[in-house]
Length: 313
Image (cartoon, rainbow, N blue to C red; front, side):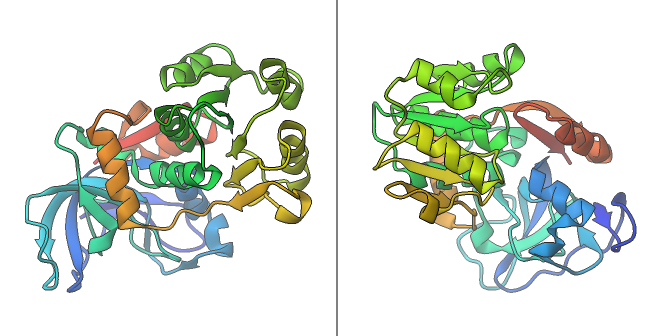
């Protein structure tokens, strides 16, 4: 089968022919129709993920997937060959991936894809939507509250804006004027602040003099920076969720601070499927690349592209 593969720790990834995966009893073999690129995939590709993952070469890259069941393991009885599913590859070992014609994954890693969702949209949910859901859950938003989404123009941010707006939250999204501003407003942002123009906390306070109830931070990796932002925008009872592991509860007394790491959870994938199937969550896909164009997709991701970059397999 064709797959986008990192052959060893000295070479770059390339599209090549590799053997089809072997199917274990508790797994399903998925014929991949679509995927998308995530910052995590770029880290696996450039080797920087080695600080938290073990590499088993050759590594097939890719996390997100939508496709059809090609074969079932002996212990899988609740899915059918030919059924369309979506999900993701998520484990501490870099080995199998979804930038391939076929991938074998544990049954728990996929759920049925909503009938009204096309392959490209379903293939762009996966890791970003799961991470966004965990961030939203962590800040426990209540209807009518104001929540800042810092880093709203990426995949996780786009999903977080929608999930918060769906819960009746007043979303303040960070974005630059133009296409970024237009995108986050279409996704449900109530207000937009330009993070590149002056002090972010001052800009938010100008909109909400009393501050915000919570912050979903998808940008900061520096504890000092996130601590300063959170304390200037929230008092006791505030909540912050961070994907950059910069939330330090000891520095944020009275504030519920969570560092979010999305692990596969079938119930969470089913919740995402329900939202997408009901039209309450859409994949903010801005560009679609072919399997042979993944290098270009990674380059676009590195350049700071908007929304999700999809891969059609």
